[in-house]
Image 1 (spheres, rainbow, N blue to C red):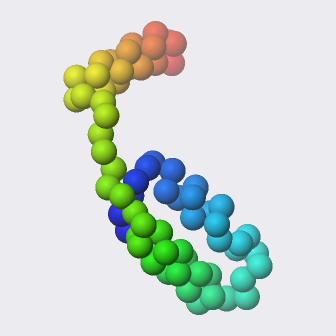
Image 2 (cartoon, rainbow, N blue to C red; image 1 turned 90 degrees about the vertical axis):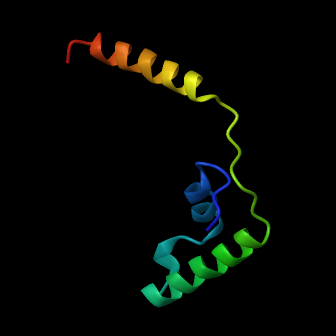
Length: 71
């Protein structure tokens, strides 16, 4: 499956009925497979907008915050 966002899982869980409504794992799998086919028919590749340096800077800021908590 091509992933266009980090919320791909959220997209398909919102579009597939509640798993409790399925009578079998096979039926659930078929529904998931159908979703993947429909999704991939109109999928686009993920495009990075952040630079590697900006990502590393963010990680550094988060690491400093975490280490400052004293845990």
